[in-house]
Image (cartoon, rainbow, N blue to C red; front, side, top):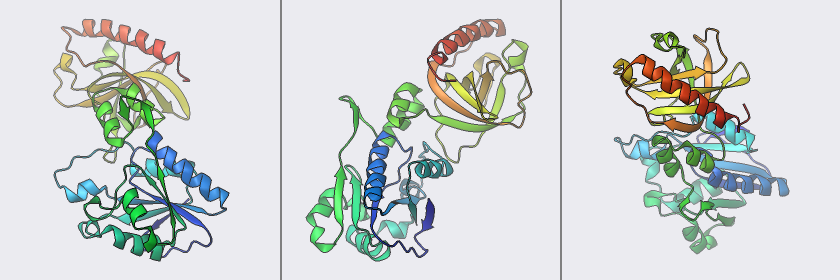
Length: 312
């Protein structure tokens, strides 16, 4: 996969097919579009092009926007490469770019720069100034360009909700990891470096690794205790993750701490990938460390039961 900035020249010979979007999270709805894109490109012995933007449009258009991502930029690119995309066409999103009308975008980028043969677009995707460009716009103006268009219909899990990056973010913030993971099509994860903690967990038989997250603006789940898998030295371990202020010990700052089952060696300065499976409970204040330990024993039992149904 090649990443090409829109300021650079691109020379794709033969058939090419493209799609447009930010694709945060590469969730099941995104995968439907990407699979169609890659499959059709291969059938035509051509190239697949994913047109995307950086930074996120909302962060440019609204300075007060506090959008948090489902995937970091690097992780997103890794996922797209695994999906078989040939080219990532990266456009810098600026206020000036946001004023480009849909017709100008089509002429300048899709026709003049990329010379695509076909465009695949998601059912709810819009582009151009005031979001005027969508499938209906393309359909109504198709005589102005010579590439084919195809709309991908929405993919639903059930009748109650549709898949979207914003709905997945809401589920993660409320700790509903099961629902979020079902929509993503994989388990949400965070990555962090182990830093020195205060050793309270070790005193009660539940040593924890305090994490400094490598998030690149990535969303962090709501406070609580989660069952998770941990990738360490190319091996997976089971464990429990706590996110919160630790009210039992009068904590003030929000911390992310992990207890890994079966690990008794120093993890300091190690980098851990934490794969969140489900939320066990909300964060609570206990009357003593002994009371906290009793609850942690219950949490561990619950976690192991859940992990027994997972491949660890």
